[in-house]
Amino acid sequence: MKIHQSFTGGNIRVLRQQGNEIYLENELRDTQGDWFYWAFCVEGAEGMTLTFHFSPNRLGYYGPAVSHDAHTWHWLGSCDGDSFTYTFGEGEASVYFAHNLLYHPDRFLALAEKQNLKVEPLCVTKKGRTVPCTAFGEGELQVILTARHHACESTGDYVLEGVLSELSDSPEANKLLRVLCVPFVDYDGVVDGDQGKGRAPYDHNRDYAADAAPLYPTTQAIRKYAEENGCHFGFDFHSPWHKGGRNDTVFIVQNSFEKEERLRAFSACLAQEVTEESMDYKSENDIPFMTEWNKGAPTFAAFMTARPENDVAFTLETAYFGTPDNLVTDARLVSLGRAFARALLSYIAAHHPKAPTP
Ligand SMILES: [Zn+2]
Image 1 (cartoon, rainbow, N blue to C red):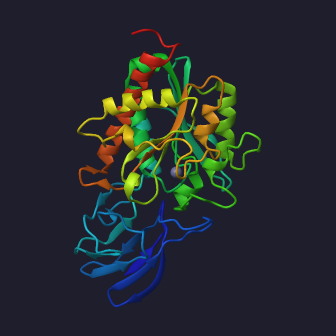
Image 2 (cartoon, rainbow, N blue to C red):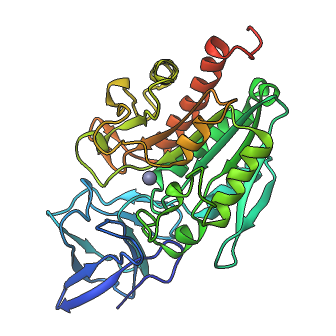
Image 3 (cartoon, protein in one colour):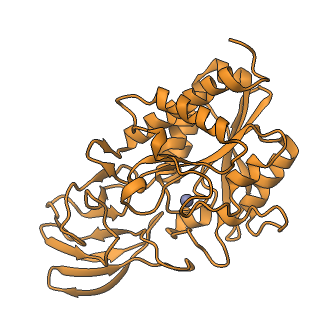
C-alpha cells in the first residue's frame, strides 16, 4: 500500500502508520500561518479498511472528496471528527481523497473545446509553465474573469465554468461583451497542490498594489491587459475559509463604499437568478466593506474597481462544502455560475448607461 501526492493538486505528508490507522498532515509549504488544503492518492489497498487521521480543521462536513481518476469527485458522505474510514473494494487499485472537490486544468480545456473557445497562452510562470486563458466576444464592455488567485480554492473554477458556459452560449453576451478569462491565476500552485493562500512574501491576490511592481508573471499580465483594454466588469471567483458561519455560503465581498449601491444592485440580480438546481445565494451573507477581515487590502477586485472605466469588480466567495440544504456539488456550482452570468446581463441591461436598451 502506498500513499502519495504525485498528481495534479497533490499535497500530503504521512506522519506515521499504526496498523490500519494512518496519521496525516497537509503541507503548508510557503504559506504563512495555518491553512487546510490537502489531497492524496492511495494505491494498492484493495480489500483493506483504513482510517485516516488529521489535525483539527482539515475535514469538511461530508468527509473527504473521493475520486478514482483525479477528475470526477464526490463526497464520501461521512467522517468521524478529524478522521475518516474507507474500505477499499477489490477493484479499487487507486483512490484519491481531498479536502475539497478538485478542479483539474484538463476540465477547463475540455470546456473550452465544447464551447468552441480558443485557449491561448497568457504568460509563462516562474516554474516555466504556460498559463492558459481564453478570450471571446465582440462587444465594447470589457469583462475580466479570474479564479485561483489562491491556488487551493477550486469552487471558484466550477462557478467560473458556469459563467463561461452561459456567456459563450449567449449571442447577446457576445455582442455586448469582450471577455478575458484566466481560470488558474496561481497556475504553478494549482498544479503543484500548494495552499497558495498567504504565500510568502505575499500571495497572488495581494499582488495588486498600484504603487508596487507585480511579483508574479500572471498578475503582471492581467494588470497589463486591464491597462491596455480596460475593465468595465471584473469578477474573481474564490473559496472562503474552511467552514462555519458565512464560510458555508455564497457571498460577495463588498470592496467600496462609493459603489455600495451598484454592489447591492448586482447582488439583487444574482439573488433573482439562482435556481433550485444551483447553489443558493442570499444578499444578507455578503460581507460589507471594512468589516471583519474585509479591510481593504490590495486585491484583483480592488485594483479593477479603482479603474476609471470600471462599473463593478468584486470577489465572489463560494463555500467548499455548503450545508445540507445548500450542498456543494460540481453541478450546483456550475449552475451558480450560469446564474451569475445571467445576473451580469440583467445588471447591465438595468444599470449600465452604455448598454443598449432592451
Ligand atoms: Zn481566496
